[in-house]
Length: 196
Image (cartoon, rainbow, N blue to C red; front, side, top):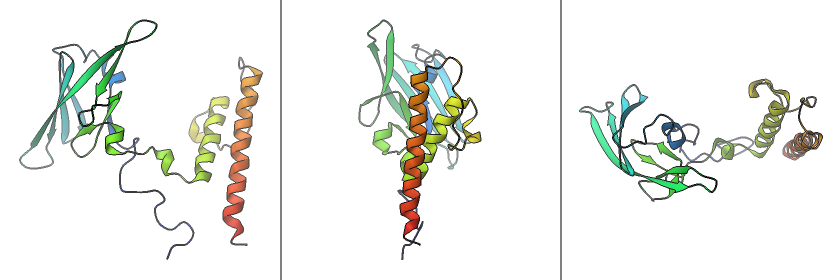
């Protein structure tokens, strides 16, 4: 049993943060949904929609699931906390309906909203092997320097210094690409040396 690349590395059947639908306070605040008395509808999928009703200090999330007959309706009260920022203004947070922890995003999973910690949702990068994680890091830095999309970058090229960027910043980013590529080469060497 086992062998090279067998099984799902670090896969436990749970979706990742990137795969789940999320309700972000940073997205609903500019839309004015945090004002008391506001109502809105959010269609998660063709057969699932959420009615948001705002009251003083809380939001009522009413999830209607039409996948089951008859349609099932789930309601959840979510607290909204308002904290003063050091240089003026306020920062709004959700209070997770399960644990009460402050968070800026609630994730929708199995017809229920909760924070990332309650669902124990990993990030996509946490499921990557070390070599792929290093390659993604090098590609991200290359995309930052070249101005190209992330899909067009390989992580192997070192683009020229962008106009307006400080030389020390450029050198630090180039060093990050070189370290990631060196670690990637070392990891690949160790991984394949047992086959030689």
